Amino acid sequence: MSWYPASFELCDVNTKKPLVVFGPDLKQKLDSLKSPEHPCLKSVEKESFEKTFDGTRYCSIGTSKFNRNTPKSGITGMKSIMGFIRSSQKNMDINDDVVDRDLIHVVCNKIDLVPIAKTIAMTFPLYCAKTADTTQRSFKVRFTSVDDNDKCEKAGLIDLMDNVRQAAKIADMPCNFMHCTRFLEEADQVVKSLNNDKISVKIIRGDELRDQGFGGLFSVGQASVEPPALCIMSFIANDDPKTKNICLVGKGIVYDTGGLSIKSKTGMPGMKHDCGGAAGLLYGWKNIVQQEPNVNVHVLLCLAENSVASNATRPDDVITMYSGKTVEINNTDAEGRLVLGDGVHYACKDLHADIVLNMCTLTGAQGVTTGHVHSSVMTNREEYEAKLVRAGLDSGDPCYPIIYAPELLMHEFDSQVADMKNSVQGRTNAQASCAGNFIGANLVNGFDFEGTWIHVDMASPSHNNRMLGSSERATGYGVALLSTLFEEYCDKKSVY
Image (cartoon, rainbow, N blue to C red; front, side):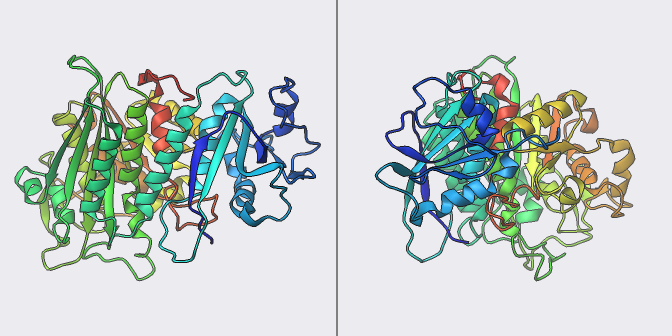
């Protein structure tokens, strides 16, 4: 797979014809654009690639066969379009006197803008260590929203695209570059780029974690050369104590060997992606802050490398979580729930969260449960199941609910010597839900938590990049989902 370094900017006016004009049900959209300010747009006869004499292609994404669980933007049908854009640098059929081969024109309804922008972004990864010469491409993207006469504000789409690509970059970088210290530097760069005096940062790291009671996070990362860390980044909208607190808690396992319950030689490669939850929430938080939220929004990055060393946590060890619960370790490869258990309790106890959302590449069972494209979501509030599904469809980060039934599932963690074990007894009892329930048990008051708790397991969607046809490239999953889910709390007018 070739790699193409690329940047993106918003384009309002075409000086040349675009390389490609595309969108869902394009012919119907183009037929509705009769005004002369769209001279570059022409109708097509059928839903397929169409060439004009100068090289511009018109591509319609047919959506008539999509069901209620698939985004109507047509993002699942964009692979061939993205392939054409990626390979068009040396296309001999393009007349450069007439066509700007770096201009992309999207024609769609307003609701399709975010998922299409997100899909374009995941087509052009930022990280690559290839030494072959490559030509930087500076793309210009013009978005035309048909159903609102092109009136909605679109500047936020470029922010979204950049944040999706940055989140994917973190997950794509190997641990010798993206270790815990480097991840903290990435977070610092995010704060500096926002340049907002409403933001504060707190870092608890290394032995401080142990001394302050973060037994889950410390135990997972204690064998690593780079100490584990809890990074708390807070945007405080105002000083009113009644202001809602939203806390995002991300699993940031920068590499997962499995610990002493070590992974196999084929199961371990790719575990650099195990920080995808924290990466998506870091840049999802940035994207929300750029939308000027009227609530307090915190992001907690639970960072650790699950390593093997003489001081690594052993199976049979008993640790004490930040919640005070004791855990008998029966699988050191079930480490994500340990770091997140500490994180969600801190969100409740110390940050007084009204809404806690944790996101993670938690289980292989997630892909079995809801597939490669849809994350598995679970919540203690029934009304949020519908909100999550809707946000997934509108954002292009699809998700689907799994069962919330702790009274049926928590017995899987029964221990003779501690409050619970960290891994299930059996493999046939809703594993993805069980893993999420372990995290929920660490909320303040456990499953009687008075606020809203949302669990997002995006193990498969985090690295199954359907636009590149690869399970080895990160997708930046979560940035668009979070921004869409919490759009009601943001003041800045945008396309969300």
